[in-house]
Image (cartoon, rainbow over all chains, first blue to last red; front, side):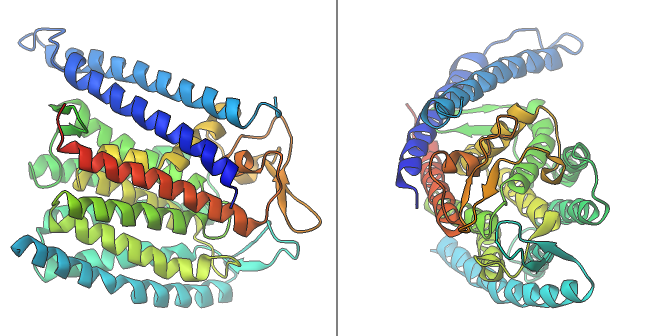
Amino acid sequence: MNTRAVGYELVVFVTQWGLMLLGFGMLTKFVAPLNLLNPGLSLGLYFDAGAKALVALVLSVTWLFIWDRQVRLYFHRRAR
Amino acid sequence: MASLGANTIAILIALGSFPVSLALTRFFMYWNSKHGIIGIDVHKLNRPKVPEMVGVAVPITLVLFAAMYAMIGGASSIPLLAYSLVVGLDALVGALDDRLKMRGIFKPLLTLLCGLPLLILGLAFPGQVYTSTLHVPLFGGYHLPVIYPLTILVAVSVTSNTVNMLDPLNGSMAGGISIVAGGLLIGSILIGAGSTPIFLYASLMFSLLGFLYFNRFPARAFAGNVGQLSIGASVGALAILGRTEIASIVAIFPNIQNSFFFLSRIRRFTEHRELTSKPTKLLPDGRLADSEDPRAPLTLVRTLLIGRPATENEIVSTIWMLFLTSTSLAVISLLLTGVLL
């Protein structure tokens, strides 16, 4: 077993896990309770859900970007 | 105690999936070899011929045991029916891909449709298949009446395809997902989940172990897309049925990393067989090494080989250790679901 690789991946996984919980926490505490559009309006419920999904998408892309940078930093410095 | 009894019975029934999967794997090894359904193990110097599509033993076992559990009245038949349909449809897509060699884009598109039974049965029988509340570790949960049902389709497609993409070496997928299923089974027991997800996680783990017996190094059976896609679909469907959505994402971190780096370099859905630049190469001594080709995808296996060639066995052990790490974090996530900040 490649213990060095497992060690690096452990750092990556724990960091990404922490960031993921933080991101879901932000969505739960701050984004989900917001009423961006009046649900009484025609399609208001759907636009509200769409806007919140967009916020979640931005957070997911940021999360993957950080993952990408970490793996490149630990493993692919020489490859670049 | 009643719950403990139901869970014990569920696990004991699921234990039967190990010998059934083992026997079915052995049967399909023989049948597929006889009918010329074979692949070549390209990571060995002598390039042995190995029966392909033998992973079909796993979805057959899963569906068989889900039906049996429903018939003996172990649980409501609606979630078990939804689960069986998702696994069966994904196996069908996988079998079509194995036989017809479809273009890379078709698999994610077709597997999107495979989540429909969960969605339709969930809408027809509210509360029996899924609840639209996402439980977040440490932060409580929130209701997603519009987004959650749509996410089901994406979830099944993503888990199917990401599991499909991380099976390059003998036993890497079967062993890795056994660890995931085992960890989520333990987590589900610890948080007092219902007997249905406990039964399904146990039957997934035991049927994978049955297949792994022949798929481990040196492999005498290959899963094929039929096995990989249906096993991935099983993980996705169980995340919904067992309310283990976030924990399941954490458990499959090695798959997510592999798929993300593959797609970020290739920038399109494609098959491994269509790649002109290979991520790894076989050395004359039988070890695997990084191909050092800048156009090749940065797969998980390539990442583990940078600057250090290794034997296939060593790489698979490392991958299993990564799954053990991510699954441990997944179990902690499940335990934290009930804890509020």
